[in-house]
Length: 378
Image (tube, rainbow, N blue to C red; front, side, top):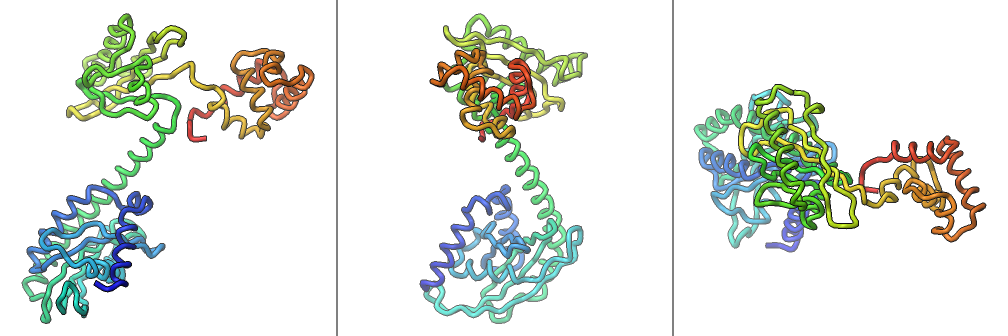
């Protein structure tokens, strides 16, 4: 393999594993390999690839390679480039095939000289996106009439599948984004299935479970670390399950949500936990049925107020003073903690009042708490 080909493959593999490309196309690519194998077998090819192309950015990425025969690495690089130059499909919603043939001459690939015929089947699952299935045949004569006819018959089926694949990819991307939103929140969130088993836990929820900080896992279920609160939590989860399964007459999620206090080790405030049913009834065991929210009253308030202080353009000193006041300290106590004089603290407080359009300490605390963005990404 030439140095240029090796570098090309390395670049391709880096792109294949890159975060941007993974988010752009990632979605059960193993199924694409199965579809590609069937296409290669019925078209008389020796192998093939499926590649994705973002047209406006001229980006291409290998999505799947057939398992029928392991193609030469350098050939795969050429196939991806060639597929990117293949004509576009007629458009989203159209199933008429656009099949082209290209003759490529490769010198000493895999220790041999070969001629390859390529059959490109392009699809347009979304505007600005092209997905191309490329079948490779080692032949000077190319694909015969039967093989072409087979590809044309398969094209409408494959086109619909690619569109379904893209819809699934879009929904998966939304789910991944929502999961990232939960992980960025200071609110712990857990999903339970119809058997009250843990399906998903946000980063904050996993931390609570791992440290047994009010909540812990009992097998695959959730329970309280305080023996006195375990029955209360169990009953709250069961009530939410009954609503989800339709065995309760109350369908208003807000009315059926229960708020609990789960006691923790001495010196810690109780964990505030809310259980609520998922609106859509869980049918399968892996369907979510109950949402568990948990809030730690002892969490660091300064981190929570950071985005609010940025919104009101408070200086670091002003933000620190506001943090002490929200935590319940008097101005004199805040001044002592900050090692500044009382008059200096009052001068800073006046500036904070002006920036937040408040006039009293109680108003300032209310504005800061109401404006708090409950996220840990700042």
